[in-house]
Image 1 (tube, rainbow, N blue to C red):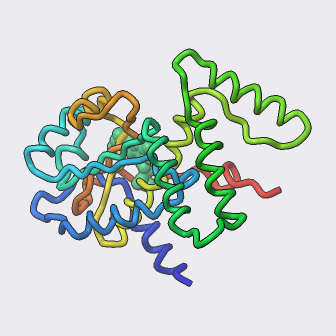
Image 2: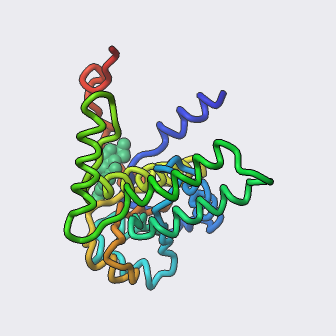
Length: 240
Ligand SMILES: Cc1cc2nc3c(=O)[nH]c(=O)nc-3n(C[C@H](O)[C@H](O)[C@H](O)COP(=O)(O)O)c2cc1C
């Protein structure tokens, strides 16, 4: 349906590391792109993410050394920090339950009951931690026993939880970058930053993690560092 336009957006999006100093990005472009990012698919609709838009010149300047002085940060007109919030699982599970409850008229239906159970029982099982690894062992044991006879969702420790939230957050980051491209602007995702200092600058608690930082601006030719090399499709795409 939108294949041609989508192809154009995909081809247009490149990581650009040098933005035009004379072209501002309209605020509406960032707002719209963030609003599109929140529509990204995410694990159990828990939305364990936050997006910090770095807009003022003084804040942007502060972030240049935090992004290790990268050119993409130095020349950025806007930046967005994509943050995972695994620590907010309780309130997000409750929020989902409230949303389901708001759809109930009279007695809850089967889907609504299932949803309430899912957020009331499955999410605590997946996300709760006790600091000494008891919950991780319980999860690993359940996965092992249940997985003996049939396929079962394998999970266990904190690493699994971190992977879950980072997957979803990265999808939001991708939606954001594609939207920026669709609006005719350029971006550069960065994982080259000092996470500890970024968290401190944003006053984030221990449970939050930085997924990536995306700088935005009007790209320049010198901001493209070379042709877009990719491995041959046969090496990475397999059909069974
Ligand atoms: C998670 C992630 C982290 C990245 N970190 C950086 C970075 O710190 N600095 C940078 O210049 N580019 C960074 N990049 C951009 C990649 O180098 C780039 O996407 C890749 O070379 C492919 O080029 P393309 O985006 O133009 O298609 C990052 C990309 C991703 C997805």
